[in-house]
Length: 296
Image 1 (spheres, rainbow, N blue to C red):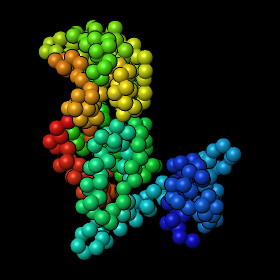
Image 2: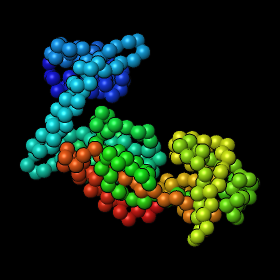
Image 3: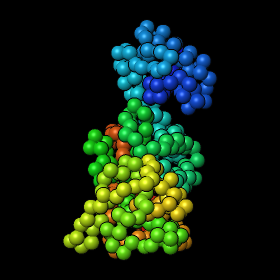
Image 4: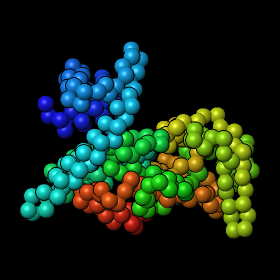
């Protein structure tokens, strides 16, 4: 039995909570996934997983095995990087996570450009805003937008995330253009689900306003909200990295541009500097340089 592969399969099952999902992720049969886990249990003489018809959970022995397996896989990844070809060419796989909107608007192109420079590297990009244990999920880098990054992680700033209120020309022609923040209360507004219950914050000089907007449509993805705005659904607050092109070509128009909206930081988060591989360092440096003078 390839014990490293068995450890990889086991850690994926633990992360996914599913043999079928692990089989799909690793492109192997469910029977092969089961066989690797069973042989690892036989080798360790311990039951690692509790299996029911609905879920898979770790036993106490499984918890201990998971921690050790993750350490072994990290060490193996480091060893692969340290024993790279003499020409220093990077290889292996990096796992990233990002919001859908940032991946769609900026990160997909950046990753593609990085892979052109390092043809032996592979990148797996998982999309979503949810909190993740980066070690358990074996994520090398998490791209997150926040004013207060997780203090348990190392954060390297990539760029500022500014926002703008936008609507389509057809919507504004039909419903009128707000000339002061209070006018927003009479309009159809769209909101991100994570912030739907929070007031919209606007400021101009020393003046600060918090408007309790009533949203007719909420979604947990900024890209979806942008498409709704393009379909004349209403006014929405969106990051400029996502709508800069739509503003340039006139498909969306800025609302109350003299008022400022909250600004956040786009950061690359990772668990530890100690196990940062050369490939991750190279990607970090690349992203910092690419987004250093972002014009969005």
